[in-house]
Length: 339
Image 1 (tube, rainbow, N blue to C red):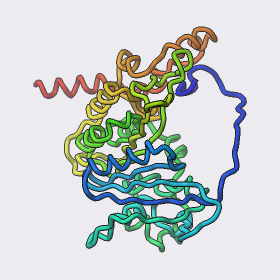
Image 2: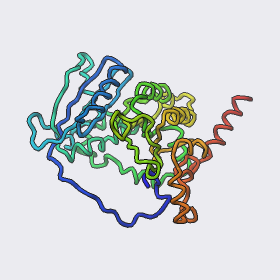
Image 3: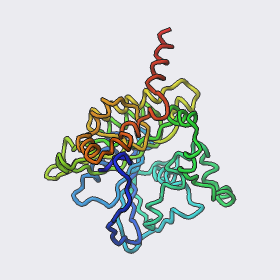
Image 4: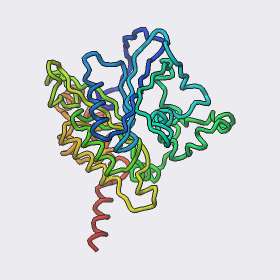
């Protein structure tokens, strides 16, 4: 069952169906500088197109500016080729940001380039999206001399960074940083971007449109069926809202509680019929978790195959409680305020 995170069984064998892939991805960058409402409308338009692109992505740089990207597979390049994976190329998000203009002049014209497919798939790896700038400022990370001498160090392996993490480091990562991918209905775009901006003040924000299908009550899995489906279709249009980095109040040395902020974001997610990816830290109690996810099929499978006797429950395995008692922390902070 999707989203079970190893809490039902051990996967021993997997059969994948593969298809041929074309050599290039034709990428069209559409800068929008006229505000939240306008760039959200562009995202909706390309997401709901009857003949959609193979890839749709938006990088939101502020409440007023974003770049919407569509990618279509191509056998040949009929224009500029950009090998974004070459060792000296800038972090991809800075390349996308340049589409908005150079600061002195603004650009709203569509820009087209062809990216080799392999390099396109891994375009965000070098900068780990934009989180590497929290440890390595852009002026160094994008410097050709640094890349030539020490570029082999980047990006650091995320698995390697996690392995030596002590409970104290894990707590700091959960309370001082935000790494969240949240799936939400497309109609919530403006509300969710504004809420994330208010709560975290982290830019850019990533938007990946995606479909959530209605598989029927017996096969739906943990992600609940869409409340609103696209007319004439068996799916609803959603998007992944990616928020990665250090909240602005923490960067400025101010008092800030990211756990409370995440709980507020989770409330919006539950209310609108969305769900967070469970690789990330969540701060829900069991009742809230059960309201967000459809655990009916999951619980039946756990019981039928006696997984409940051998594997931790999905909630126990993915909740923030596994690293520290966040409820106790919130209670202690509340008591301090009352004194």
